[in-house]
Image (tube, rainbow, N blue to C red; front, side):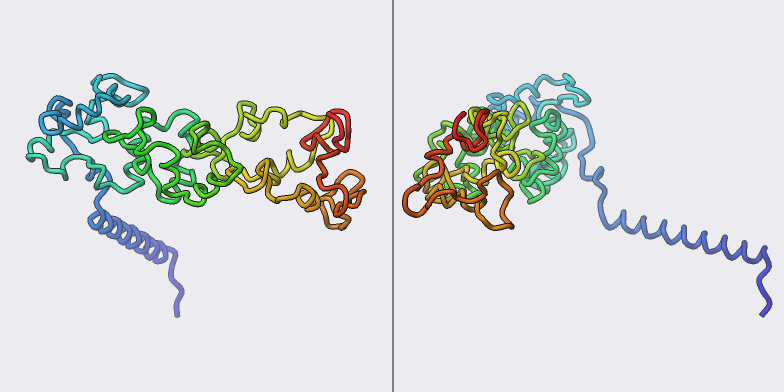
Length: 318
């Protein structure tokens, strides 16, 4: 068979590229027709003003005026790149909705939005600042929990944060196992309203496991209250800085004093301080120097400053 000339190869290559581009164009057009674009779901038209909304939605309008969202009624005001238009700041231009006799399909109804789309609407204003900057990557967002699962602009039960229920009852709706832990004999006083879940966790996301906060000095959040255990110490107890407080304590609640994970202090210490060569390296003595089962029932009787010391490498003195 005679080989193709260079001009023939060029023509074949041109035809192949032309057919490929044509096929891609047809495929994209078919996909666009099958799936409505996000812009088509956004109502178009003119802003009619919140007073127009009030004629049909007076109850909702009046409730909104009692919340921080009442600032949205200052129409025309700009915050960053966002311009306020009252109710239409969230629900979009309302002229088509009004002309359609209240047609819900011609306005942004949050009941008809997906969790992700509804949260995206909220984040157009509420994405700035450290508190909510990580929401899209948070455990809540990645598990299908959106803004409206916890907040309600129109029917909030709290003045602050517009929560649908007071804390901690709101958190307990999903975190039932934590509710059980907070009923144990030794616990943080969350049920008594002395502290809240938000004091330790950022529900909108953080860079730490379980959405934990950090203290002002970027240390573990426990040190915000328990400053005496923070240090820095000349002689530091290794788990405090490596594994953290939860290596020994159960932060929500425990059946043991001091929120310890086990009932006897010695059993807790011996999880690391054993004669086994595979144990965590520790300063001498690596194992118990006394008869633990008969006489010395608590290591902390002598090793008093177990979180760290400035004068004793075995934590006898502070």
